Image 1 (cartoon, rainbow, N blue to C red):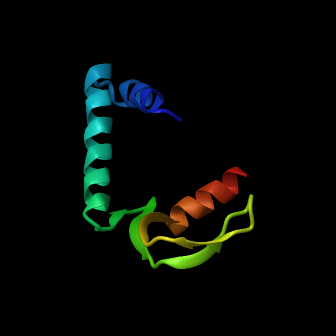
Image 2 (image 1 turned 90 degrees about the horizontal axis):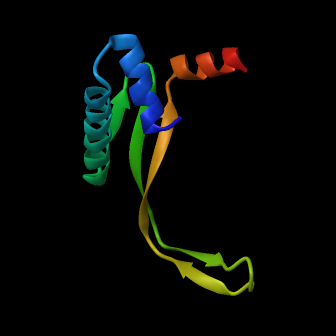
Length: 93
């Protein structure tokens, strides 16, 4: 699903003009992005939680050459779905 498809669904279900629906989606995504970039979690009740995790540096191996290398420390985003979302996906499948 794309941003345009989300805007179209909001337009159809709520009746907002398409431009306003697109603006709302952009604002929500910007807020989520900004919050995660600050290292904070984003919890959406009934949907799930986005977390920022810090990974420490570690030894790894280049799969093409087999050469050992250092994988640098980094921050990654993780998502843990809520039980409501899990059961909805399970029922649909």
